Structures are given as structure tokens and as C-alpha cells.
Image (cartoon, rainbow, N blue to C red):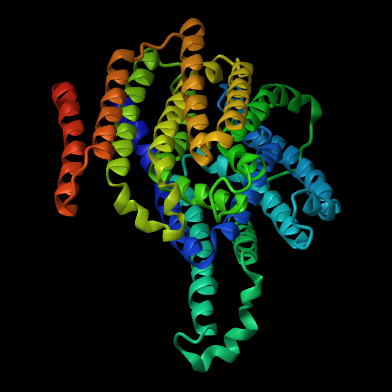
Length: 497
């Protein structure tokens, strides 16, 4: 249990910045979905889908390569840090220069020729994200979780605060809702026609402030572009680049395909871009599942590498998987069963898409399982298997989106996501069983997932008319899951105290 406790502690430390920060950032979803129409919010989601792809290109797997090479017994971590950050610095300058040079063409290509400035701002955001990725990795390598969390939280607080200031306070003063004496001053700072541009510009300013916050980590950097030394890192990292791109297809291609592939008029009175906005807003209701997965990944990657040489590491990895699934299955039940409560976090114009939430929650549960399973090819330096799996998942995602969007709309995208992540987890498990066997309690894990699905179906399809009785019923279903877990695992937990 000491190994598990160590991972839980690290997950909590790194997860603080992820969970609390994202939770604060999540407060912007009710703001965006009440200030902007679905079509306007769809523009934001659509452009950030492209940003997600470029984020992968800008770092091209070097963050994971840093952990791998810095943790080798003979390695000098600071020298590895210098080499990796030097490579990122050069490539970032090239990528950003290309985006800025062709910003007009890109704006025309994506259908917003009148908003070239969005492309410029997002290119600069991408550059800063890439440049701070390795200093953040250095903090994780040095186990400086408090500083890591503090900087991440500061960035989120600045972003949230600026959004609330401009999109709520200044907007309401400008519209004369209160403090009318300040309206002339606010008029110099706030322009209602700027619209979603505030989201992009605030993101850029907040990210720029990360550079002085990470000054100590940047100050120790020495430019060392040694191609021969970089070759093994790039060899290790390039499959991760393609794996990341394929993985991002699974995560965000549905927004792009919805806008392009949804038949016009599929949802009466709703444009395709508005459908993207509705789907994206409802996707945000899976926030607690994605937060759990992200927090786990921050801690798990360095943890798995550091524990790889321990004799009982396979048993520890199996135990981690089981409790991860139990925790995520409970989140799946709790949010799905109480969906009408969580729906208040988004504007009523977006509620038509709520039926996708349970499907997306279950899909993300399997994504978390997949991330757990990837330990085998990362520890055996067979990262190309991750590339194959991710490309297979990307093909499945595109195929089922193309097949299902014209028939089921955004529910088709949700189902395609579920099929993809389940398939990736299954294939990764089967391959891992051959190359790096880990004694996962498959029967136990499967039973918890099936129980969670049954309880969610019971919550969604067993009608209870009275509101309060319905809430009691839904909470009881959540309690049933916890009771089953305690009945099966309680004795084990007590014996390890």
C-alpha cells in the first residue's frame, strides 16, 4: 500500500492545480453559455479544436522523452533539460513563424477571413505553451508539486478573473445594469462587438504571464542544441508525436466534423456551428471525469517510470488500475444520475444536447483505463505500439463520426467516442498481456463497470415524478455502488491499515 499511497499523494498534489484550477475555469462555462449564443460558442470550440492539434506538434513528444532520459541512472537531468528545451525553442520559432506568415490564408481556410487576429493570438498562445511545457516538466521531475500547483492555479485565476471582469462586470456596466457613473470609463475598456475575441486575447495575456512565474526554471537553461545527443530522444519521441496527433483526433475531431458533416437543418432552427457549441458545452459536463484523468496522468507518468525497477511493480500497477476504475465509475454514476442538477451549469439554450453526457462520461472512463494500460509500452520503449493503437482509434473515430453524424447528430459523435476509447483500451490490454504482463483483476474491474452502467440506466429510464423523491432515488443508486465496493473491498482495505 505504500506505493499506492505515494501515487495518491502525488496525484493529490499535482491534481490540486488540475482539479481546482479546472474547476475554477469551469465557472466560465456558465458565463460563456449565457453571454454567447451557441453559434458564437461554437466558434471558440471549433478554433480550439485546431489549437489542440498544434499543441501536440509544438511539443512532439519531448515532454515524455525528458522524463524517460532524465530518469536513466547515468543521466544528468539538467543536461537533458537543456537539450530538450533547446530543441523546443528552435522548433517553436519555426512553427510560430509559419503560422504568422500564413495567418491570412489560415483564416480564410477555416472560414473566418475577417478575424485574422484570432490566428495571430492563438499562434502566440501555442508558442508560449510549448516554451513552458519543459520547465513545468522540470518541476515535476524535481517533485516541486507546490510550485507547480501554485503557478498553474495563478494562471487559471488570472484567466477566470479577467473573463469575469470583461464578460460579466464590464458588460453589465456597459449595458446600464448598475454603476452607470462608470459607463464612460468602461466604454474605453469594453467593446461589445469584440465578442469571443476576449476569450482568445485573455488566454494570450494569461499565458504570457507564465514566463516570469517560471523565471527561475528558465534562468538555469543553457542553449545546447546537440543533434547527436538529441537523436535518441527524437527517436523515442516521434512515435509519441503521432500517437498524440491520433489521440487528439479522438478528442476533438468531432467538433470539426460536426460543423462540416452535419446535414443543414438536422436540428430545426439550429445552424451547424450552433450544434458544435451545444455539443461542446455538454461535453464540459464530463469535467470531473476528465479532471480525474488529467490529475492522474500528471502524477502517474513520473511515478510509473520511477517504480519500474521495483520487484512488485506489476502488482502495484494492477492495484492502481482497479481503484482508478472504481473512482471513475462512481463519477460516471453520480453525474449521470444527477444530470438535471448539473445541467444548470450551462445555459438553457444548450440543454438539448444533455443526452450525450452519460455516453461521453463512459467513453472518458475507458480513456482513463487506456492511459493506465499504456505503461507497458512506455516502460519497454515500444512507444510505436501506442502510435498504432492511436491511429487505429483515430480511424475508428473518423469512420463512426462520418457514419453516425448524418443519422444521429451529436449523439453520433458521442457514440463514436465511446466505441473508439473502448476499442483502444481493449487492444492495448491484449498487446500488453503479451509484451509486459500485468496481473490486472479484469473480472473485478469489469463487474464494477457493468454495475455502474446498470445503475445509470436505472437512473435515466426509471421515472420518478416527484423532484425530491427523484433526488433521493438517484443518491440511493450512488450509495448502492459504494456499498458493493465496500462489501467486496472493505476487508482488504481494513487489513492494510
